Image 1 (cartoon, rainbow over the protein chains, first blue to last red):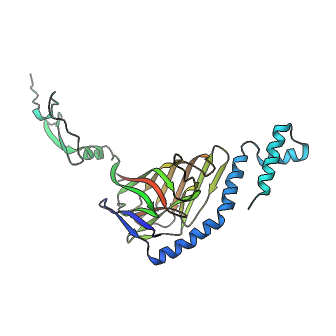
Image 2 (image 1 turned 90 degrees about the vertical axis):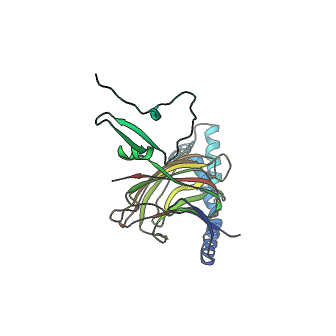
Image 3 (image 1 turned 180 degrees about the horizontal axis):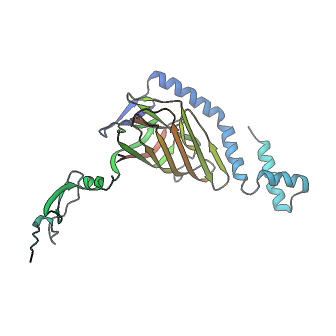
Length: 87
Length: 216
């Protein structure tokens, strides 16, 4: 599918022009790179969410001294499971 | 006793035909310091006070790979407001670059920091080949990105171009994100163009408004 530039010039006129063949080829490469990296990037975003309830330094403390209760133990287990699922 | 004369066309008379003010409309004012009637546009009056923001143009992205403005002017600071932006690809980064007349867009020599504070955790990005507005934006309806990008002296040849961005969006994990970023192009040159793009895929939607304000 053709990609397009949408440009507003000095007079405010808007034009839509197709990518050149070279631009299409370059963009195909960057899109393929993004697709290849997407699983890892999505995993990183999911890991980031877990940091609110269980920051890494707390996880390290609980690993040594044990978590306080069942709820916190579940947080710990879930985070370790997600970390183990890294693509 | 002195008499002050007022022109009839300055008075808003009940029942008169009402029309919306257009950019080129001129208005008369009585200057009591010299008793002369002065005439100017609304923008001309705003400029006397050090300059107000003046709308330049609107570009609406609709499955476009890039959106660009090529009319940045010397002697002005610029503001780009972004609203309703969604990438076509989930979690795509959102970047921009500046360019010189041609346009020829620069792909190096940037320095900047993008700080993203989310409802859970934070993310920071540093890039030298472009300037990053979002480190990962959702493509889901209802999670649109909005923000304001201020560009200082872009088209002034003798100064480095500085830019600051404040905005909000949502990550693909549906985290509300607040973004503060600052950028600079490290070599003084006249940047007359600016181009926005996701780092992959198209921009599904987005409204980009360019404003300018005299800086001299």
